[in-house]
Length: 146
Image (tube, rainbow, N blue to C red; front, top):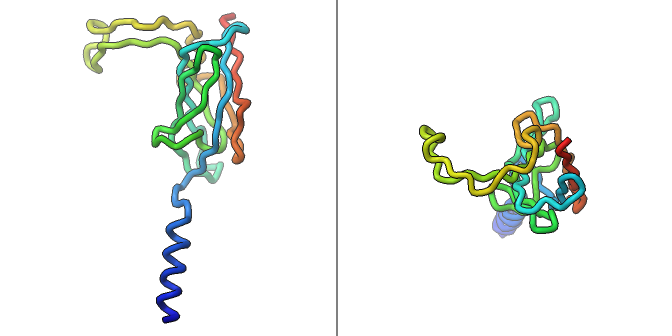
């Protein structure tokens, strides 16, 4: 009987534990461009952890801004928020449809022009954000075209 209770207790503990090798927290904020809300911008958070951090990298998180430039992130695994810790941030409004990996130039159709300077949506984007374990609603980015 004692063994049965132990097994039930262990199953409950294991069933309730978070086995993900990373932590996420709710993240929202606002994006502006030259002081004006940036609508329909895609916001991407990419974990920027290194081996020295002692953290395992988590999934990317993304959102699209509303008409007032506000957004709330969701991970690629559909979890609310973003990976806790340092994240590189990329922001873009440009959209291209009808492309295939091997035939981009021929089939590309611009459906939304890019309003954001290229420096904000490359792998070397200068934007970073440290996601706190408790989450935040103040992940704001004030971009400039200058």
